[in-house]
Length: 188
Image (cartoon, rainbow, N blue to C red):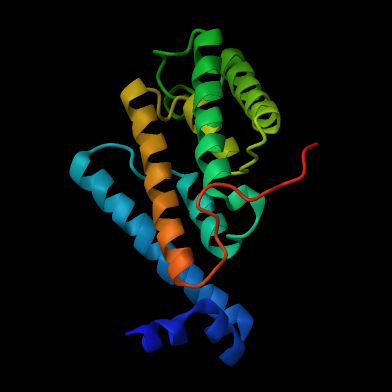
């Protein structure tokens, strides 16, 4: 079994086959498996265990796993910042119990809430040193009213944590130098 695992390591495959095809297959198989499992949980639990910004997160975690933005710390904290900022923007403009923008259209309050959420999320990720670009989509999902129930916001963060755990296991099994928590980055 160890011999088979060693031959299936990503580095071994990259030496034997064209790099672009290996990465494409790696992203395809692991994105399909990881998001498919979360979508199945969403179906069974009838909760938003799968949501639009989970796709770009999965892509980052499997295509560029060694970048700081893909680290478990940045992934989990980045989405948490996005959720908090999106929900805070809803409350700031009296939209916490409003229907989603997709149902009612975008008015001035929704414009301001979405602008505030993305600005605060970007600034928050910089201040907390946890940049993760897909969290910008998460904050808009919240501030546009697509997902607003506090219990569902927790589910979104749990789904991000589960995807991150899957990435740790998969990337480590593939022989990648994927951090368990954070990759050292220079302070700005």
